[in-house]
Structure formats: C-alpha cells, structure tokens
Amino acid sequence: MIGDALSSLRRGFPILLFDSSGREDEVDYVMPANAIKPETIRTMRKECGGLICLAISGEFAKTLDLPYMVELMSKDDRVRGLIPERTAYGDKPAFSLSINHRSTYTGVTDNDRAFTIAEFAKLKTNEELVKSFYAPGHVHLLIAKRLSDRRGHTELSIELSNRACIAPAMVLCEMMGDDGTALSVSDAKTYAEKNRIQFVDGGQL
Image (cartoon, rainbow, N blue to C red; front, side, top):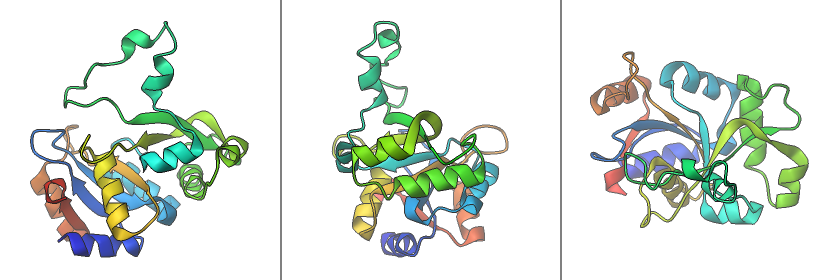
C-alpha cells in the first residue's frame, strides 16, 4: 500500500520501488537521504549490488545551480557525440555530477558516502555546495524531471518524497540478482517480505 510506504519513508525506513513493466523492469532500494547511515550504504552495496545514487528534485537542483551531465557534455566537442538520443529504455539519463564531501578521504567508503549524502541533503545554496563538496566523486547525483515527462526511479522516488512531505532527496540502488541481472519482481517481493520492507509498484503513482 502507498500509505504504508509513505509512513515508512517518514520514519526513515527504506522501501523497494518497481518502476513499471516495459521500462527498466527494475526494482530499486530507496531510502530518504536525511536518514542515511553507513549501515545503509553497506546494505545497498552487499544486498542490492547496483549503483548507489542520490536523486533530487528539479527544484532542489535549480536552487544549487546543478546541471544535467548531458548539458555539460553538449558544450564540449570532444564528448558531445557520446550523448544518447535515447537510452534503451526510452529516456535521456538523469545523471548530474558525481560528488564527494571535502571532509571525506577517498569518498568511497561506507562512512564517506553516507556522510556525503547526509551533508548534501542539508544544502541551501550553490555557495555552500562549492565550499563543502568537490567533483568528480563517489556519490552520483540524479535530477528528477516532472513525473508527467519521465517515469523513472528518480522521478518516482521524488514523487514519494513529496507525498510523504519529506526532503526531496532520496538514495537509490538497483536490486541485482545472483546471476548478475536485475532482480525479478517476484524475488524482490520475497526480499521485501523477509525484511519487512514496503514494496511499491510505480504504476500506482
């Protein structure tokens, strides 16, 4: 149920989020950024296996003056040709910069990534961003479009944050199976039941 998932997010607990059949057909482990801990990063790294990213709303990105990666690439002749017209699942990438907090060491450890994410969620201005963070780093930023324009995990997770009335910054990680492919929906639901995590079908949003 959506209501139970929103309650979990308000309490700082994770949920599993399926985008939809015919798109990526993937399930992501989703957690509010302001509730992230090193233990959460460890869980994502060991039990999920995908790329750990931080999704933010378009409004938050504008406040921080953050661009999409493809916007930066489009200004450089050397890499402009790498920009895809569309990905295999039909959308342009939501990626922005990758970042580390300046207080971290390598930036990749569970402690470093958790700290980078938690501190990023507190930002208010571009000046604070530049002062406290550097790029490239080990936390990949994603910028959500409007849900009417794109229906990926980035947008769906931010829609859930809006409905839950929490900060528009959500940590995502794809669930991978032991065979190296995306974890099936049925196996993801089994994982959710075993770990008492709410499962959300993006088609319900």
